[in-house]
Image (cartoon, rainbow, N blue to C red; front, side, top):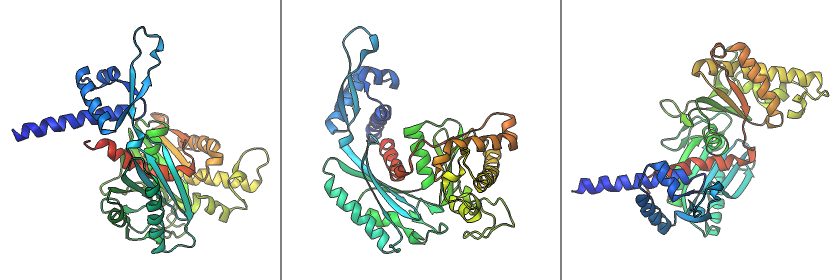
Length: 380
């Protein structure tokens, strides 16, 4: 008898979750929810009435009818005031914070430089800023915290291991630190993975196999299959920046030689060529010879690593994010041409290279998305 009751409760929770997922991005009527879930209209009416009573859903006005005859239907939507999550993006030069409600609306953002911080003051400053904002956000409750950091990470234990040039949080269990203070679930994820997930959820759904590449002082990547992150056996796959493109090349802080990070970041190009910034790489008729050489070098080095990734994972698309955003279209086209010319995969099917639709200022927003996804996937 007890097992039967548990099965009924589980089925009910699963149906509530299905309704939430359908409403996550667009308001729908009860009739549309019935059609999309296959549930009887009476079941949808009962479930959504409970969810409205719980504060998770709200009525959002009448539909536009789209030329249909008859009474206009009442739309249901996620109630953003039900709760929110915090996002924390840990970068080598700055820390960015964000509060995002369950509708995916950013409520607050804040950032500060890391230059005057150490491994003791940095976590305390994060905690102080979040506690202050939590006290100010009187609408809804804190449902979780998402943290994005460069890898390698032990995401299961919540420990930032030893990312190169990232001593501020080396071997620090940041999830334990925040869980004790905020009494909510805390999730640690690779920054490339959070950005890739945000791209899929809020910018453009990625079908097939894609590689999301972040370039911002360092280089990281996340492999996706139909929107799901592939993290490997321990969740730390995707270290494109530490793929060696020259086994006899420059020494990398990771211990390897010839790592992509030593060649394809903007700081690496500045050290190698007489350029002042990203705009020197534009092909606007005013580019200097150094700018042209730097751009060609960037395409060759980054392209070499991407060809290896395309050949290994049979990718359908590569998405570029980060410090090359001002030349995103030109760089994406050049890399796509390079991959087409050098990858055996392109003899079978095309591989697209495209710029990310995300602004770099939204990295903390992306860090919050795994916590929001967890909310939508759990039994409610």
